[in-house]
Length: 408
Image 1 (tube, rainbow, N blue to C red):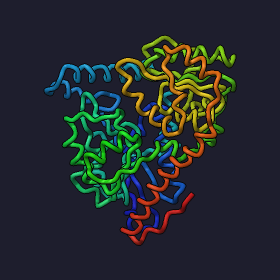
Image 2: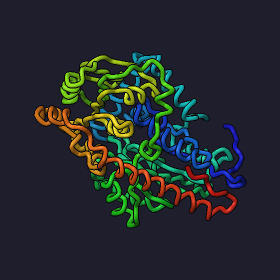
Image 3: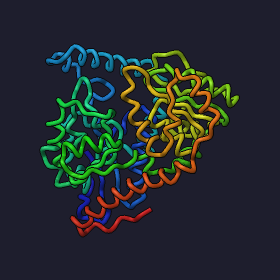
């Protein structure tokens, strides 16, 4: 393990980030990029602690199947294991390589993969694992998984103490508007160890404030915190213009029909990025973008249709005409993230259900109210930047050797 100089003897704050930086998911990579890039722009040394647990995406270890637990949780492990195997054997190898290049190059991910909480704790006790501040966030890192439950690492709970690093959250999400009461006591205990608390959704703020009994900042996703992704879009080659970009996750139900109507309205062909998890027929023409090309496909689209939170975010950041299609049925609770964002920007009219054809056609003909949204977006960005700057200032006061970070 490479040893790095102890940061508390230098003037540059060294910050370790815990998030889903390893995911082959465009939104997860872009939020990871946004937080690190913003911190670096403030004069910090920011890097990802290379924690990649088996229970995220791969379901968990095979030994977990032998432990006590519900059949539903065991079925989830098997499903994720098979999905990971399918991705390895049948995934688009060129695209997988593009994800890996983005992670190691643009995100700067390095060092050995840490699979367990014990390995993370040992790393944070080593010279190379000495940080001035640890940040957990964003994405759904605080959502209990069906097969694993709560992961204490994403709550920055380290028995070894992490060498006294300041611990804060930045925009973590529970994924839903409520937390299962079965987890409340455990989560409350973890929250007590934080120096600074924030959450991405208002519902998340309410959960944290109820359990922690202390003020919690409402801050935007790191993609909004950073705001400017034009450089990544400009770096992408071989991306045309004028298409309808359809970014579908979890289901093609509803969004397929909306994308088709958007294509008819604009005259542009419908493009959808490849998704190894897709269990529905192709929507339009499948493309295989790198993370940079995915951004460019949004930036150069004539219209964007998505049922994803980050698909909604980037439509807004690039000021694209868009519709966010609600997830139907049992997945409807996952709409909380997009609806919360749209409501806060005065754009809830851009949220539609795919089976409401009349509303969809009407919204396709209506412009996005950017005049209302833009000052609200600026206020959201200011809240996130203000929260992090206050935490960096508190870090400086705790450690006078650290010079004041440069403000962008």
